[in-house]
Image 1: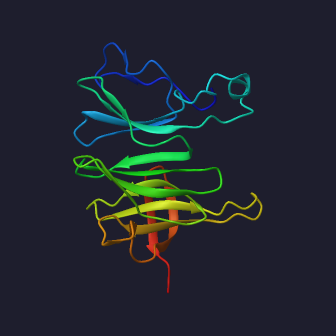
Image 2: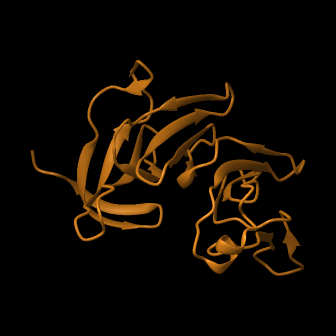
Length: 193
């Protein structure tokens, strides 16, 4: 399966490795207390083992999960979709997730204690790769227009992660940023108004 790899755990000081899951993942993120891992995988997609997926001519649908490293319990947090990614809040109590279709995806905040999911964006763009601010009050994400590659545009935006919420969506417009995004870290300045 293209871009999906086994997930192993090994001590930073050496030792034997331990495979955490019996199926491949496309991305993962540790919780701040190192007790859980958020991961993205296509292993439950009925088409994940089809010839087209294995040849790389078709991308399987993925979902976002959380794995408890102490118990081995895993929970699926989203339905199947495209543009799946996620990040832990700095205090480990929430997740920022992105998922949707090939043409659009949105950013969601999930409260792990109450297991409540709130939609933070609602647009016709691909909103993906959420990253929390160090204080946990904002989420940065990449937004890509779904136009053809030569006409598409992308930008980094930030949105309030805590509300207030009206009709299920965070109020206010995302703020555009200019800068460089590297993994879950970005160096930027706010766009001039």
